[in-house]
Image (cartoon, rainbow, N blue to C red):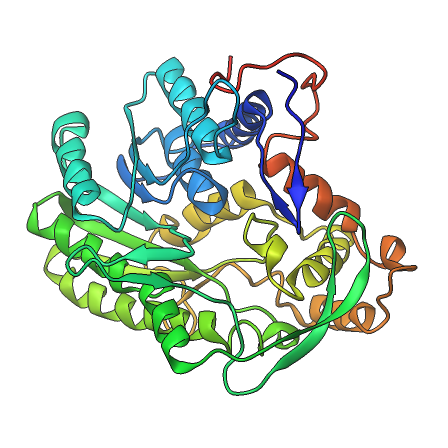
Length: 394
């Protein structure tokens, strides 16, 4: 069948198997050329390792650091007539490349919040990796969580707290700039968002791995987060997601304390704003990222997922000595984004944005193309006129 992008309200409902595989191979090729000039982890667990920063983490660990990896992600498989999720194809492309390089790779697909998947992961580490992991990456992003003990269902929302927020946003596909107002969340919605997007499950994972004795001496645990500029504070850092991220940072301190006898540490890494399946539907954020991309590309500061995570491994986690952190104990990979000159330029362009001038003051084309590539579309070298089997990346 011919597979094309089907996009509704900035959500892509399809994915192209060969395009997704090509994007995975592209990241592998980039990081494989980097010199491996330091000690790196040799057994790595990535929770949420099928797309975005999680996938880049697994690729960097395996194809730069030559680590054996276990990845956990929740995916929808393909059928004869329906495409799978991008992560479903990415997982298969990664496994194929790992076999080619002689690396051990265990891919587990299922609900990472559940006891069952945590148990399966422990067994995979013991039986397939043959030893304890020395790096745990937590890169889980989900709109919903079912409590494994009570069965209660929690749903996350991205809303302001206390007051409505009105801002400017853009339709990714049409390029239309418009005003949007988001009503504030009530306390229950805020609490549920913390349950889903906070640090509770991260800590449950570490506790489970610790109990099973599959954490190595000196283990590092890293969870990914975002802060962003003042422009997005009301909807992001000062909203429901911001409260969840505060909980994540609090849990990092508790996890570090629990790992102290292993000489281990836990960190929250604050990463750069990037095009993701989630960011495309967050009010205000698509416009901000489109302008940010233009500014950072012109200044030679732009990084994608793989470049950013490689820098985290090389210059932060495994540079030797103490891990560089801010005063809150966070790794700051958003340092280029938050440079004063970058934010000043973004701020100026932000207040000029209109549907008419958007192509000239932003990189909306780059945003759109990157979003499509996340789903395997708009990838160089892929013949999209060719019939494709949704069940195969070959």
